[in-house]
Length: 493
Image (cartoon, rainbow, N blue to C red):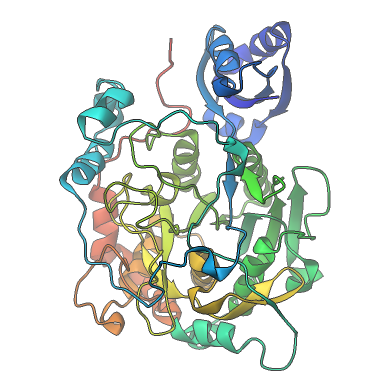
């Protein structure tokens, strides 16, 4: 059955549920934690499938939109972590390190400017479909492709051979962490007291000791500390190697047979983490090593529910979002901007990928449509990394930006441990302000391929008390946005 995320007025919850039942559907879940914060109704609704495969739930979507009081609907997609296949899947590709120097095209710049308009102005613009065509992006062509099985990260993260757990198997991981000054940062703290919520494929329990497991949630009700796919264990293994005393919450989203992660499941996980942050009265770092392929158009505007929710959670100091920058550069875009909106909004920290020689990985996404300064920072990835219940040789490509994101999350955890209860913008400014592009041979404050440069975890911790004095803090505060807080967007009639 097609699933939808339905938003409505708070007093309309029962009426919307009754209408859904009359249409032959049912309420799967009420996202009560987000709904309560935003003073709205937020329901996951399952509707009868359409007989026409090309509709992809279009008839059900129209029926939902006709219900009085319903004004936001997002349908379900599946977001994959990796591409299954051998390393020679792309035989014509030059696997040597390359340095991206192309700048955004004029229409990409215009797309960025559109997202900087205040919400009250953005609402007056023509429909995104017309804007997308006018700016030369075109519209996606209909196809019979199964929307549940779209690959993520082509040609970024390809699986490699398993490696035995022998002494020295972690040498590549240790080298990665040394590049970002983790040993120096660990002399200051080990992330004690910070909490990282990992939204992924689950976590194999071997990577997180029971004393560090704050909570667990699984969309299917199975063990969140088991990981048949392996990707979430890579993330957790890197995270715990860097910040071994941080608390971890495993949020295991259901996956399709090829590893696709449900977007609706991600919203459920964020709602669960929101409840944890409220209940524990402590902020949570939300670890997102997932994303979407980026066919570049304006049909997925930056004011998605994901961004509106993250703005609300960020401004309440409940959830600080840490993202993989994406592995889509040069594969899914018309211009050079290749980040999707969720990981390139103003409230996101996104990590780009460098190789062992501190050069940008060829796949690492650059630029951001929703907020131009993405990726935020960079980290290295290469070689043998944690995977599932063991280790995997991922070659010189490494674990793509998915494996750079937990390095960011661990650094943020140590920053929060050293200086708790700060405004999230201070942590972002300190992380950006302490990163170094000069170590990468780049003499600039910001670069579209590397962001502010290579993470320097110890310097990031030390900069937190002075973060409000750094230009990055002023830049973030001064940059306008079209994204309204969840619950403060206008009703749609």
